[in-house]
Length: 200
Image 1: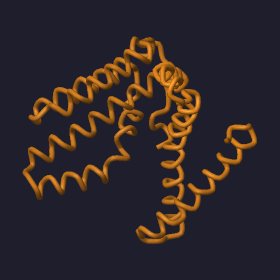
Image 2: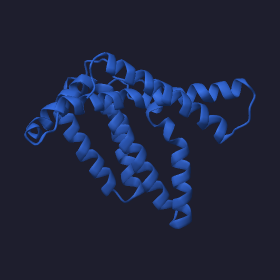
Image 3: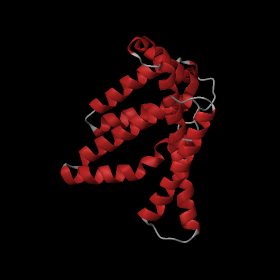
Image 4: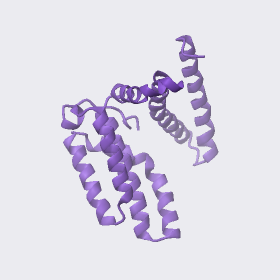
C-alpha cells in the first residue's frame, strides 16, 4: 500500500510532460469517463489506461496497488447498483470509478509533488488580492498528499497487528486503534509545524 500515488522517476513522455497539461488532461479524462454509459466503452477506456501505464513504464504491481484499496468500496457500490438498477449500471459505475482513480494515480506517479504544488500556487496567485495565501494552500495540499498514504499505512499496520494477535474481524478493533494512531501522528505534525513557525 505504500506505493499508492508515490512518484516513480522515469524518462517517458508522460514524465516529461509539464504538470499543467497533465492536470488539464486528467480533468478531461475524468469528465469523459463520467459521460460513458456502455460497458464496452469503459472496457476500451480501461485498455487505454493500461496502455498509458505501460508507456510510462509503471510496473503492473504498482498499477494494481493504485486501485486495490477500492476493492471493498467497489463491492458495496456494486451491491447497491444491482439492488437499485441492474448489472450494467453496476459495471458502468464501478468501472468508471476505478478508471478515474487509475488515471489520477497515473498523474501522481509521473509528476513530482513539488511540480503539482507549484502549479497550484501559480493558479491561486491572483487570489492574493482577496486575502488568500497561495503558499499556505500549497502547504495544506502537501500535508494532505502526505497524510493519505500515511493513513493507509496506519490502517494496514493496525490490521496486521490485529491478525498477529489472532483476533477476528471487528470494526471496533480496527477503527479505534487507527483513530488513536492517526491523532497522535496529527499532533506530531502540528508540533513540527509550530516548531518551524508555521502558525498564526
